[in-house]
Length: 245
Image 1 (cartoon, helix red, strand yellow):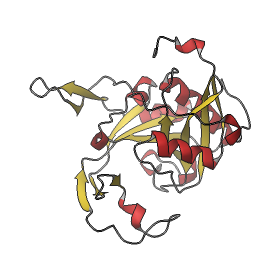
Image 2 (cartoon, rainbow, N blue to C red; image 1 turned 180 degrees about the horizontal axis):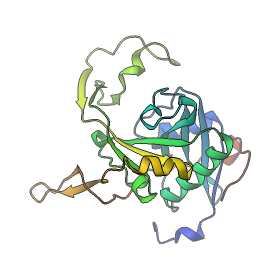
Image 3 (spheres, rainbow, N blue to C red; image 1 turned 90 degrees about the horizontal axis):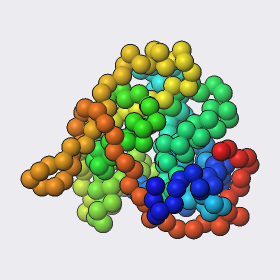
Image 4 (cartoon, rainbow, N blue to C red; image 1 turned 90 degrees about the vertical axis):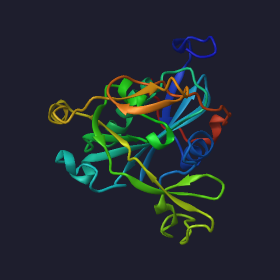
């Protein structure tokens, strides 16, 4: 509960939304500030009629995404962004509704994968709360730290994407990250039984008595999603095609 308002008293609505609305949400309420270039499903989120964010599922972004699970690239999708302003509703509930929507729109998809980045102090608490299956960490990768401190994926500078430069800006530096936590959400019982055998203990966050900071480690437990800054987008600016509640 946030701001003294019980979540159940808030009218939550999820609808398909436009690329423009999704881009606005990501640029204002997601640390990456970038929207995936791959073919995506954009699901807008409203509370009491106000647009408060987007959930994005990308299809075909990584053809090998489903290979470890014996799936074709067309059978697997990635939850690539959860970009929300200040909100009353549970993020776990929002994602649960979004999963049903994307499954109905893409009946051939059997598995959703998502990643939590410990480099940005994320351990995947929203996935743990939604009973996703944790299957381990990805390999460490290098990212680009721009002169203004912003962290960018090296693929951003391959010159292939929209408005993508071909050269890394002068003054940038490469930074090695520890790899990301990988979570899986099977969309049918048969697949869930198979992937359950790959399940590993959830990462958890422990506090440091000396510094007062927290450090992600592998173990069990969950962490709450931090509240993001709020801004208003007029509902008329997005294209809603159906409701889910």
